[in-house]
Length: 187
Image 1: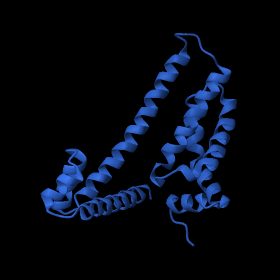
Image 2 (image 1 turned 90 degrees about the horizontal axis):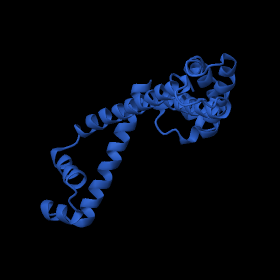
Image 3 (image 1 turned 180 degrees about the vertical axis):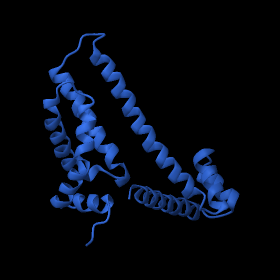
Image 4 (image 1 turned 90 degrees about the vertical axis):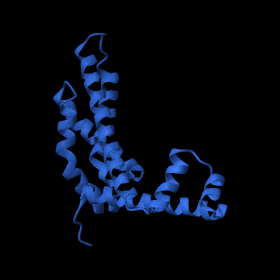
């Protein structure tokens, strides 16, 4: 199998392929090392924290759901390890430069989360635009306006089971569409 992108490597690594994971480490190690180096005081700790990041990522790789989010996910793991490192080795007094560093780190983490949410929302909007007007209206009525399935059955003059099946199938279609869009954006 020819491996053309990170998505293929991630899927192989999630299936236990250590060579695929090694290739992911090679592709992301400089970024993770730089990310960690920007957040700690002692350069000699960078390699250890980067190694811990990848060890933890390997152990938890099955939890990664959106392959597009690999870089953000790795940075999140590194960020948590840096925080734990500071708590363990560098207790700081109130007003110390560590407080400022923690605030900056918190803001960067929020920024990463907002970026991931923004990408997902854009994918959802694009996928919703592909649905028929009837299905869009049904979703709006049920999920935004909180109308019950009973109200939908009366509005659309369909059986309860038909409405619930349409909602279920539409959710599955949207989920697949979103995952496809996120995968394409990563590669």
